[in-house]
Image (cartoon, rainbow, N blue to C red):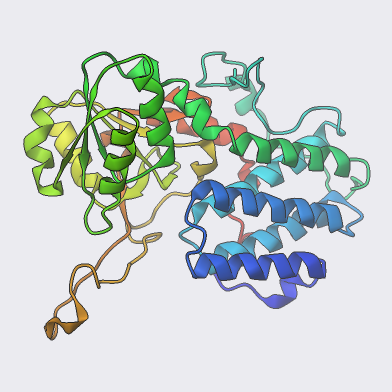
Length: 371
């Protein structure tokens, strides 16, 4: 996925500088939150559009793709980057098709920010007939940029604002899924899950069991946060998950990414958790904002994984020779193990992901490395 520097030649010096800084932070893992990654990507895309000297939409699309390729190639495991680039490309295509008269990509909303798009209970998304229509034939070479640049920038600003409310919109649905006196099992640390459980605690009394999530210990951090919020919390070792599953009513976890088939890339250990939940017939629920939805299909489970330092598993001074100590950051959870995906626009079954993909991404933008 190496990107030729010549492909960035059309970008302004300010954009190239911001891309370089962002890539450096991603490589040093100074930005860990997916929302922060998404927000910074959108800010770069906004700067790209604002400073673009392109005369037609086709050239603008290529500039956006070039900027996106540079970031994606540097950190292919940060799927949120590619997702945000595709969302901006969809904004550009929609504003061009609408001649700047409509509001862009974001799903229709009602007062209070609650979406009425597909999966959110309103059903105002595109019809099945529209999905089966001939592909978009807009001639982007003939469309001038100056007539739609302002609406595009406005739509990107709305998308950035939408990111800041992802966790709160997910949390608003908590009482629909968590009932009184239930026992909830969670794993790892995810801000959306924490907000989800805290919101339910305001109206429900329930117990949360948290797996410690070795080797990172993220589960221990979650347990502390939930206990400080007044939630009855029990911390267990990962080895005790299967034994405890018999008394659990629901498993709720976060996700690093939601794949095109409805599967999840989640914290290492999530696959075993999902298998245990399936064995005990316990619903397995994932909370994830739509910025984590990616149109990519995995060709192998290791394609977007990251091997972390083995230091927590095997100390360097222990003197063991020839011992392989892999420490993967993520697991792939197949869609058949996922009962429900709770997004910021509502709950959806994994089999419904194809509809969300058609709403939020243009088919031509699924692969950013193909012109």
